[in-house]
Image (tube, one colour):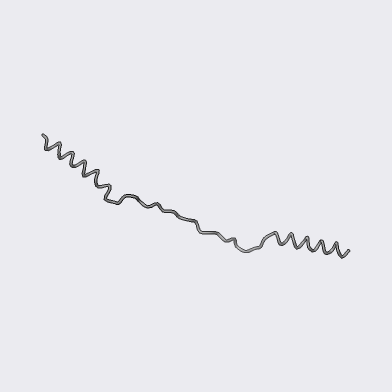
Length: 62
């Protein structure tokens, strides 16, 4: 009888121990990856300057 009571006590302790606890779960902060621009801000200036040079060349050719 003592062995049965001891087995029941261990079984009850094992089921409550595996149930977890009531503390808040720890959440990790999300990792934010920001891509860096490979070109500088002046790279967008070349296309309008080239277009202006072409227009100026067409006007000068007339």
